[in-house]
Structures are given as C-alpha cells and as structure tokens.
Amino acid sequence: MKSTTIQLCASALCVVALASSLSACAPIVLGGAAMGALVATDRRTSGAQLEDEGIELRSVGRILDNLGTRVHVNVTSYNRQVLLTGEVPSAQDKQLLEQIVSRVDNVGRVLNEVAVISATSLMQRSSDALITGKVKAAMVDSRDLFANAFKIVTERGVVYMMGRVSQREANRATEIARTTGGVKKVVRLLEIISEDELLRTLPAQPPRAAASAPKS
Image (cartoon, rainbow, N blue to C red; front, side, top):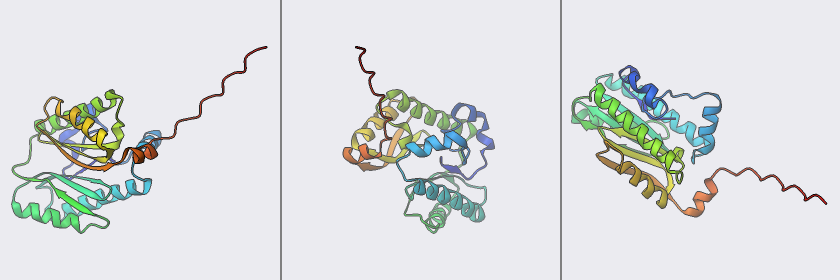
C-alpha cells in the first residue's frame, strides 16, 4: 500500500509507467501474486498493513469532505503513524488538516509536513515521482537492503523514509537517498529495531535439497 493522494492522479498519469508502484498515485489495490509478495516481505503484520490502508482511505475521504480539492495532500500511514505531505493555501487549512486526520480511527500520531504554499506543478510532481523511483531502484540494486521494508515519499525534492529497520539499514538507506540526483533533503521517520529483531522479521529461507548419496 502506497501513500494515498487527495488530488486525483490524472495530473501524474504521465509518470505512472515510469514509477507505477513507487509513486504516491500508485493503485491502492494490488492484485494476485504482486500483493502476496508485498505482504510477505513487509515487516508489519498483515493486520497492520490493512489497518494502515484503512487509515489512508478514511483520512482522504474526510479531507475531501472538509477541504475539497483545493489542497494537494499525500497521506501515508505506517504502523498508525500518519505522514502528511503536500501543499495547502493557508495555515488554518494546515491546522484543520491535522485535526481531521488525528480524529480518524486507529491513528496513533500525525506528522504534519504540509507546506503553506501554492500547489506544486505537474513538472514538480513528475520529478518527485522520478526521485522516489530512483531511490527505490537504488535500494534494490544495493543488495544489502530489503527495499520493501521502506516507504518512500518525495515532496518538492525532500525524501521522507518510513519503515521498521535496523540502524544499519537506516544509515545505508539514508546514504543511498542523499546521493540520488535531485534529492534536496532526507527526513527519517523510521522505527529502529535491533539486529536480532531484524533477523526474526526476515522471510524464511527454503530448505536446501539433501545432497545425493555418493555412488558405490
């Protein structure tokens, strides 16, 4: 489940092919094996993943009811910690936005990173989607990180990281993001776990086939 965006994704359709599952406008529901693979490698429980999806959807609905489409807001929930990014026209709207989301069922904490400025252009949002895609791709290529352990959100060149990771993983991911072209700043909103706990979250490895007995 990726972050859910208030404004309709029509403005970002041109980048879906480039960063379909990585951008804020990615489809909310993934089907078949793709969803199964994501659930299996996500470090939240399946119940927590569903709860976060519900938080995002309910938050979006209530924001639309109260603020309409005059705001551009991304809602990203991870283990009931809700990150708000985007732009609103006034400080009052920013405060109201936080109040609305904090009252949504099961929300534990709201991190309000929304800026009081004019909504960003299609070019800026396309650039942000591209940055998110590049950061995630670099994580995959690094081979020493589980990219799906992180949620990456990019807003106006600022990369926000969420997830349950070890300190080693957090440092490595930060290094990758900071050296990615177009990134202005990295904000870590990570839940740090021990290496022992990390080992318990890793997918089980399939048993190796028994070696063939030597011929007499």
